[in-house]
Each structure stands twice: as C-alpha cells, then as structure tokens.
Image (cartoon, rainbow, N blue to C red):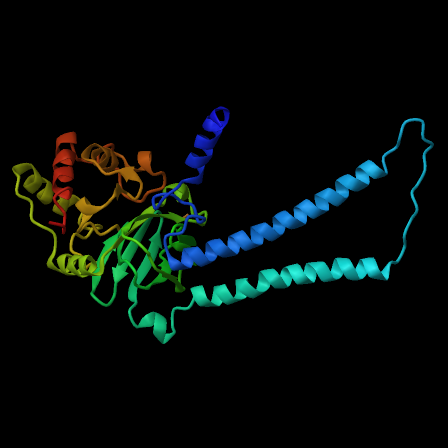
Length: 337
Ligand code: CUA
C-alpha cells in the first residue's frame, strides 16, 4: 500500500472530494444523487460491454494466430447465421432498454419544476450569466446579489437561468446540473441541498477568455438563517465607520457606482456588492482578502482576462492609496452580524 500512497493521494486530489470539490460523483443533494446513480449505471454497463468485447477479441487473436511452422491459412468462414445475428441484435436492445428506462424517468423527475409537490416550498432564484460573473435575483423578496447564491438547506430551489451575452452553463457539481444559460431564453433547474455548506459552482460552457474562471458559490444555510439573510439584505449593508473606509465610500460613489450597485434592490451592469464582505471569493475565484481586491481593482484583466471592468489603477486616475481606501470600504459591506 505504501508504494501506491503517492498515486492514491494524487487520485484523491484529482477527484476533488467534498462540497468544495467539483465531483458529480460525490453528491450532497437529491438531484445530484439521482444523476450520480445514472452515471454509475451507464458506466457499469459500458464496463461490462468493453470487458466482454475485449475478452472475445483477445480469445480470437490468440486462437487464430499464426503458429510457428504453420502454413498461411484462412479459418472457416461463417456467412449468415440467424442465431448469431439475433443474439447481437437482442443484447444491445436489452442494454439500451436498461439504460433508457431509468434515464428517461430520472430526467423527468429531476427536471420537474412545476408540479405542486415541488413548488409548494420552493425558493425561486433568477440567475443571469454574464461574461464572466453570475447575478442572483430573489424575485419574491426583490433582493439581488452576485457570485454567491444563498439557499435554504432541505428545500427545493428553482433556478430560472438566462444570459446577458453568450451561452454559459450553470453547474453546481455537488448539487446537480447542468443547464445552459442562453441569451433571450429562460431555462430551469431544480436543486436541493442535504446539508449546510458552501458548494462550488462552475460555468460549464466555453464562453470566452475567462470561462475557466467563471466560478460561483452556493451557500446552503438553515431555513431560519436563510430568512434572516433575506431580511438583512433588504435592510442593507452596514455603513463604514473608519476614516479610510469613509473615504473609500466617497471614491466608490464617484468611480464605481455607474456600474456597481450596493443596494440589493438594484441590479446593475456589474455585480451587486451589497454583501461583498460576506462572499467567499473576489470575482468568484480569488481568495477573499484585501490584497487580492486591491490587485483586482488596479488591473482586473490581469486577473481575469476579458473582464469588462475598467483598469482602475493602471490607466485610470486612482492611486494605490485610493484603491486601498475603496478596498477598506468594500470590506465593510456585510449583512452578517
Ligand atoms: Cu460562462 Cu463559460
């Protein structure tokens, strides 16, 4: 075992275990679990087919090989065997039926977003994909946020998904998916989380230079915490108290607010930042600290190629100190106690 330890460790790392990971084979919710079962059924059938074909193939290779000193010869040719033809027609039919029945059934049950049993306790979230970030709107509560969606654990969440620009795809591997986000169209996805936790999300459709950085998070919290969060978002973020953060707020108003809203009632052409300080990442993927935020504001494209945010530092009028003050301000934008 020791000899294989590095290999096992590597495999464990690659498989991305846990909620944070992006393994659809480690489900943390009803939909993902059903999808994982389907993958295992299909994969098992494929393995059996490959094995059987491989064994027959190897047998034929060995049995009909040219032996030493043997004359060239052609083995007996069989033409038209009703029995064989029936066998190799019926077996695939059976295999496809075994695959089709659960696949069709589960496809209908997991994509059900309209029946009473699903909608009665469901939370609705409108998702808008943008190059290269995600907006989440809670239409029943008129709350808008970005990058991190908050959902109640154990309840159905129905995502209405669309795109502002090109085709993206909404995927939370541990919870299920994935569904395309198409401009001018709304697609639906139902997810449900078993446990509280932060689940990592991905864009799963090549959408431009920073497709691979178009991450988001889904935070599942208890139902009470979810309601408290919605109310806190309606109340707004706390006001800055330090001198630096206040300076930053003024700078933000002059330089950033034509695109970024800090009130959850407003959608914007850039991510809503009302609860920026509570998020897990900056721009969806950078570690959440001031140093990264300053780097981001200084030159967003250096971090995320193709990002639409102007370079505030490199070729704009903001100094390092001013960017630091804006970062101080943004880190006060919290709705959590
Ligand atoms: Cu958005 Cu890939």
